Image 1 (cartoon, one colour):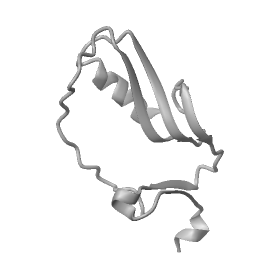
Image 2 (image 1 turned 180 degrees about the horizontal axis):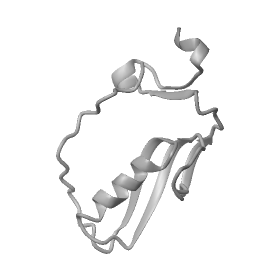
Image 3 (image 1 turned 135 degrees about the horizontal axis):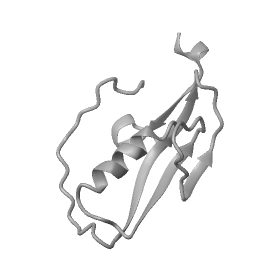
Image 4 (image 1 turned 90 degrees about the horizontal axis):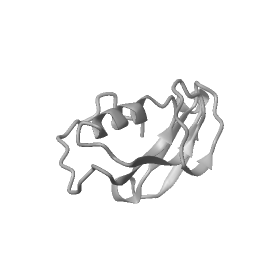
Length: 106
């Protein structure tokens, strides 16, 4: 299942105090670092955490920003033309991480 080209954006309501807290941001796939950068920027709209850490399921490389995760499930070097799909049993019927090459998308 390909990624949604236009993600559904909803409002954010944090049920905890950000000021002085350790906040762990969690992402499925770390690629360029731009999504995490946006998340950090948005987080600081809610306060000033003592520390921000990053946990990712898959780190595929190709960073464009100086972002380094603190916790990594799997390092999976990829070519830029490849994609990683993360499937979850709640929405996809199975838990699976799939590396998709351009040849498989036909």
